[in-house]
Image 1 (tube, rainbow, N blue to C red):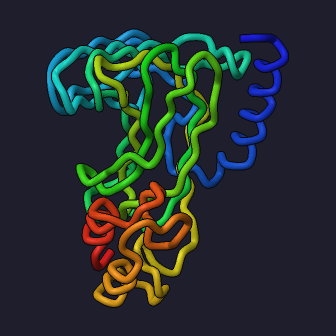
Image 2: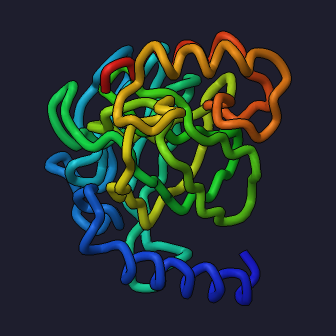
Length: 237
């Protein structure tokens, strides 16, 4: 990475960390503390596999594969650490559990610095196994701060997974999950504090191409089955 870009990214990381540390729901958000199995950990298999190289961060596989996590000196935050993740399967990667299933805030803002060496990654926040991808990053060869608001609620899990066939190689640093004040969860279009039949009526009334409208919950420019699935998942949240 060019020195000027590295210095700019480092300054932004410092500002992000200073502004968010007290409100961050994540533990070991800067990957400074190694896990119980040391600074390099390898897992092969499927589903929940165990601890990563960083304390409080875990490896999860949605597909068969191998994931190697390692702690290395950070190239965005001089003097700090970052975690390298190399995984051979799509939708495999790292995550942190914030609380029990069906508990947690309805609305959060997430962010993490990511450097993708190869492949693509996704991030998301949600309710355990009902967590969906909130962002995708296909840019390679530079640090990018990936940020989003959750689409599924409540939030008790934050994920960073490979989003490309054959997995991905990426570095992460400076992660954050912050609670947001909101009247109702994602899908509460009439802001009465609940996702219910009134909101379903609004979504169905917006069905079809609808760029920028509230009912486009996944922000793809179309109100369709994916948005309906999000609304139903948040029903009564």
